Image 1 (cartoon, rainbow, N blue to C red):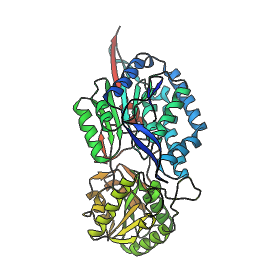
Image 2: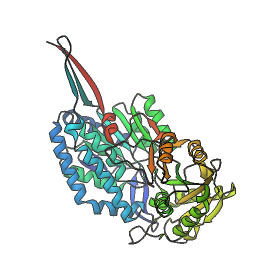
Image 3: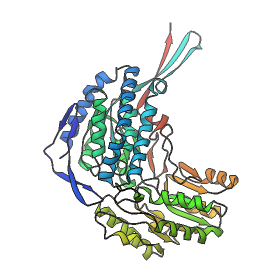
Image 4: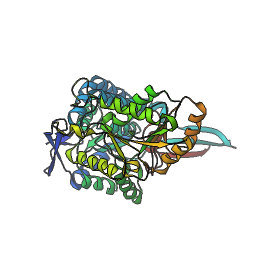
Length: 475
């Protein structure tokens, strides 16, 4: 059984456990404890005690430690990548990309001497000076999803602790091994005990974190229903909340698009990470005369994608996270067929492999009224819809409840600008299949893809983990 980290102590709680699988084989490789309110309270107590000193530690000392942490992450990138592939299943190349994207936020956090600067204005009125400062909040928490077990924690706690807060991390009970290694390296970098604490568990642990009066802010990434729940519960108790939830991302292809480029980008967007990501391009809208050529290009190329264990060279699609999740995705595909979508490529031919595999699946003639046209599938399933004009395609994209990402493929600057202005999504790609912002920009989902005001990453992340103080002085 894997342990919790409370202060400087790795503790195995006497709790019920869940298995951790290698999804490429279905084998159990570890067990994770289902911590409850008692363990959460211990972690928060350790964080609260550490906050008294850590919040007064100089910005330069915090920054030196963060640079040391970045150095250790760089040295252990391959190890972290293999841990991700072992218990998540994504390909090793995808895991390496995940680690790199996480380290980008650590890079950003190392700019704390600039990021945490306030402002001053002398002689704002006769004999009066005014100063503006940023202060930490206290103990904050992060609740992270299974699909990016290293990247998402690194989006949260480096920004929180560099600002002077202490942190309690609750990683996904499905993929907690990456968080353990991150915490080990954090202590090795020299951060004081209690600055980062780690508590494993599921709903009971989440509810205890949200309810605890000493937790000042909650960061969450996960499914749309749980994001809504976390936001409502935490906000009701007066806490700051950033809760990133579901997505239904549309990729629009105009007749003038570079078909070869668009095809490759769409396949990577739809089937990368086995479709288990909130930036997956799950609906492609083919506009006008590109409809048939695009569908055929997607079918031919997707049929050639290599499916298998992510640790093996040349594999392009790994397994899904669990057998029960694969069953959910299969029901999703079957619902689409029942509602009138046409099956163009059937990924069920890989169900006989060991582990939890589902191959790339393509459905045609999908509409926003269908389950596969409006709900998040979180698997290697691409829905193809059709539109006569860009305006009709935009209407389809804007009809769904989510607003995480939207993409257009075109050679027309005018069309791209119209798309940028009218699409209801916070992350927009133009001839880019996955419009993921770099770590020094926010990750701005819109509508039901995000609950809160300040987003993950970038200056939003710094602002989320700090509070403001203005001092007005007359001498």
